Image (cartoon, rainbow, N blue to C red):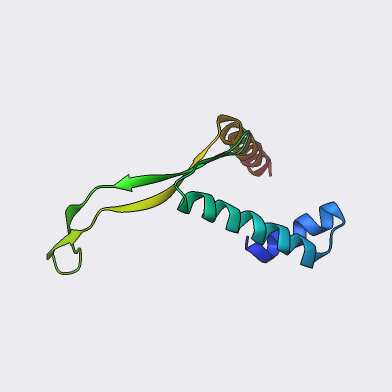
Length: 103
């Protein structure tokens, strides 16, 4: 599923135009990025939470050449799904699996 698919599905379900829906989605994504750039976390209850994690400097190995490479300290965005989200996906996948086995 792409962003365009998400826009289409939300627009169809809300009655908003695709242009309006795309603007809302773009606004959401840029807000998430901005908050994370500021070092702030975001929690969306029932969905999950975004935060930034610090990765310490270390030596890694280039898998192609085997050469040792220094990787500087850096920060990476992480997302943790909520328990409700995980349970909903698990239930859905189990139902899908049962329906496929019944065919």
